[in-house]
Image (cartoon, rainbow, N blue to C red; front, side, top):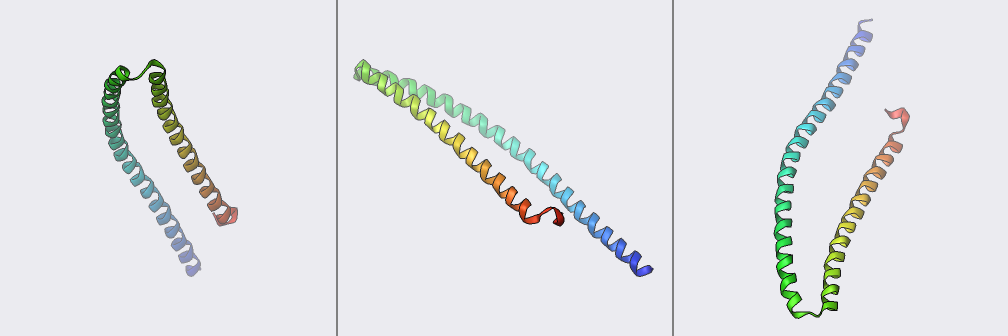
Length: 119
């Protein structure tokens, strides 16, 4: 009887310590995410400043280029600049979708390997 109780208590302790470790990891992850959020907020502000600087430079370059190019070539130049930005944005979106798909596929594979009986 004592050995059976001991097994139950040991299993309970192991189960609870495992759950506690998972909770601590989750809490550490939340703290880490909060720090990352602050860092990303600062980086976003820096990126916005850089974008404003680039926009100002683009206007200056356009002003100089407009003096030397005929109207049709100037329109081609404007179209090129717009399309380049649009394509970069589209490329980033596609990369993010691929990354998300790969993460979902990884989770699906892991869940299939674990199976319902291994939880």
